[in-house]
Image (cartoon, rainbow, N blue to C red):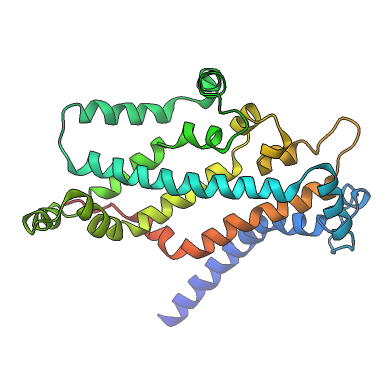
Amino acid sequence: MKRDRLLRSLALHALLLPLALLFLAPIAWMLIAATLPNAEILAAPPTLLPGTHLAENWRDLNADLDFVRVMINSIGISIIFTSVATLIAAMTGYAFAKFRFVGRGVLFTIVIAALTIPFEVRAIPQYLLVARDMGLSNTWWAIILPWIAYPLGVFFMRQNMLSVPSDLLEAARIDGAGELRIFAQIVLPIMRPALAAVAIVLFLFQWNDYFWPLLILSQKDAYTIPVALGTLVGLTRVSWGGIMVGTAIATLPFLLLFLWLQRYFIAGITAGAVKD
């Protein structure tokens, strides 16, 4: 029995190790390329050892744009968006899962329908609303507001809220607890894994978003990281070293967030399978 288990474990690791190396290879090459001059980054065969041009590439990156300012923009926008959008998704999902009101089915159908509409279809109307009618171009709120009620987050939280025992909520109401207190002190602590999963997904979405910030931001001081790195690709000159340094730095905030919340992430993804 132990021998069979050991053989299965070795076979599984033999299968997973090449896959892990395949996924890690682009990240490893990005980190190496951040230390190489432009000529060696584009050389064939590629250089597999770190170089000595990290400081030069960092200077090239900051010569073309204020990268510290860009980092502050991306971090600030992503943190505010993730915090507010996760709370809205939790409150909306709780309402759909635990309260019966007129139009609940229609409203939830609209949420599901919103998941199927491509952003390209509503990009121009959304741009006219935010830029022309609300006058929010080149501001953080122009990036945050259009996605603040993220349909996928609402759907995910609603499905997980179904697993909260209704008897527990009724007992709290009988004891005199208000709805806000029940939500804050009972529902949210139970939903921590689901909240962590939604927060990671929302942070990743906002951190990597390129198309909408490219439309709504026209001033360099307002750029987010994806838009700023895109401007480094010119017609006559491309700072590959600067792009690699900027990309390597851009992976750090999401990596830290995932490491911080990873123990909740898998539990949040698999939660909600049991309904009362």
